[in-house]
Length: 331
Image 1 (cartoon, rainbow, N blue to C red):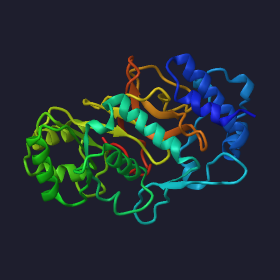
Image 2 (cartoon, rainbow, N blue to C red; image 1 turned 45 degrees about the horizontal axis):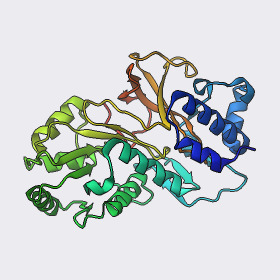
Image 3 (cartoon, rainbow, N blue to C red; image 1 turned 90 degrees about the horizontal axis):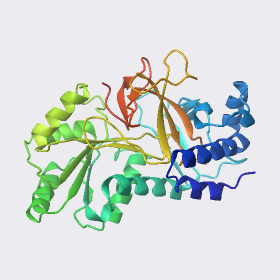
Image 4 (cartoon, helix red, strand yellow; image 1 turned 180 degrees about the vertical axis):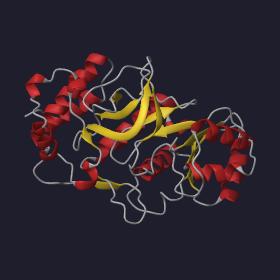
């Protein structure tokens, strides 16, 4: 059997396309061996591990499996935490059984450093109502850890406390200190109604989610409203979900980049086992090699397209699919 500890090391040492391919094949073989749900799916497709030599040949499971089954590696589930998706009454939630929490922490911290530098360079201000008011949110866990590691006393959650948040932002600007305002979409819109001027020290990052609080907007309209109301030139975004342990980030314009251990591929909407070229739209498949002990190969219900540079854009959702709380707005 493949050594999962060695695979972990290899995943976060990826630098090249060949590195990714080798690690992805190792993760695939390990998960076929140890994940009964994934193994049955791969066998049902009549796929054989020895025939698969490239990550684009690896089958991705429909994301609904995380709602209908316990997706994990091993004979017995030994989880350190279970992340759950948000849901309205009557909806079935996704459950991500995380057997090694350090993998999640390593993934989001390394990705943050890759895209934004050391977290200690920023004050982290989290405006996440809805997520804070329920348990099991991977986004809240990430924000809490970033707040802690920032080491700055002003970092924290503000929930509905706009007065306190505005005061903190004013003080940070007086001291010429950099900060990241991480917020759920509708809460950022509420804050923007104050017509603030956050200034050059601010990074505003929306994590998506109207939660039925406001009408849905296309990304261009939403970001224009936020830029005007918050006095910034660009709105950053985070692409993540309960079923993943990694995130993509956009520094503006809705184009996301991924860390080296994560890839987004676009499948043909009429043939889920065929990928389309850059520039063509289709369903988003995600390979997240940090998902070593669940499943790294996931077919989402998001629609998108990739660019020749490897970045991706989210265009919306498939019809009749649940609205995921921890992601971009429906466009």
